Amino acid sequence: MDVDGYTMWITGGSLVLVAPQVSEPECRHALAALHHAQSLADGLMASRFEQYRRWYRAYRCALGRRGWRVSHSCQSVETAGSRTLLAPTQPLLLWLGSQHADLGDVLELGIDALAMNPQGLEQLARSALHECRGTTRMVLELGVLRPGARLSLCSIALETCARPAADWLVAPLAGQTLRGDLYFQGLMAEPAPELLDAGRDAFIRLPRAGHTLH
Image (tube, rainbow, N blue to C red):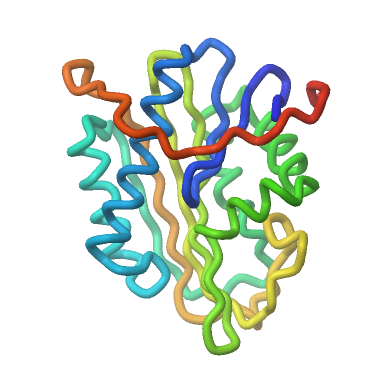
């Protein structure tokens, strides 16, 4: 799927917007690294949905071992019920928009396009959503890959008693449906040149919509 020249990719529970200036080897390396790190963290921690904070630490460490150097990071934890209304992508779009002011419209267009793509949503939901005992746990990551293999990633983890609908990616969640804490993580990273390794690629590109979104 193309969005104003940017391409949108899904790898595991991550949705990544790739700038048109990024070379194919850079793109493949970044996406393969994300998939590898998520898979390794899944193996070490069993489930990102049960122990998110421990899982995220393992995920970040795996990225480091894959050759990615974190230049900036931030995190926050708050009581989820304190939010009166929350769309899952809202804090992710705000953070990425603050880091890349020129991409605000492109990011929102990309999310809106994916929300109308059943195949892409189903692929993302396999790694981002987990239903258990009447609640749904969500771990969702949104990222931007810029020239020079500069990667910005932010993720959110939450639990809700609301059953996810077809528009779960953008549908607002009322505060009273949220359970426990709301976790947010953000980081910016670049690969160590001497450790670049495409490895085993395991990601998908969303099918072309037949036109560029404007």
